[in-house]
Image (cartoon, rainbow, N blue to C red; front, side):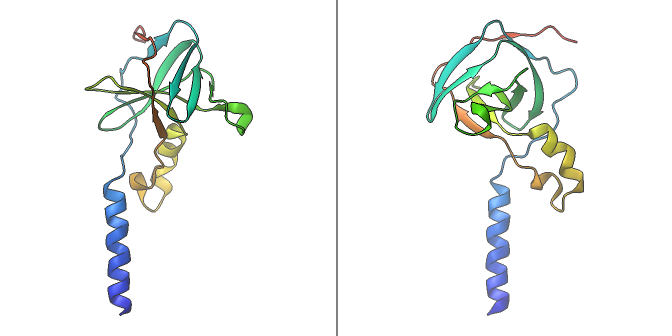
Length: 141
């Protein structure tokens, strides 16, 4: 009976890991994006204000790139002074834009020392934006 229970728990653990998005460092040479002015956008849970400036790629997954805001994004939440470390996530194929909040660079830095390695990396929270934020490509460094 114990063996059956352990097998079920292990199988459920593998299924949950298999559905998780794996993030990694962005490819070298990936250009950033620019917001010429501060912009506010709505998502399912409220509004977010993105500061103006250059957003550099902080992480990527198989579907898109996480661009980090030059300053904390204003989410209006009641914790952390209503601001979060985050930015814009842009899907490669569709161009859909999302607010992301989290610490992907820190998570990737810590991944080699975790038991699960890259599978142990906590992916940022994504909120699809109802309207697109106006962006332009940054000049290459």
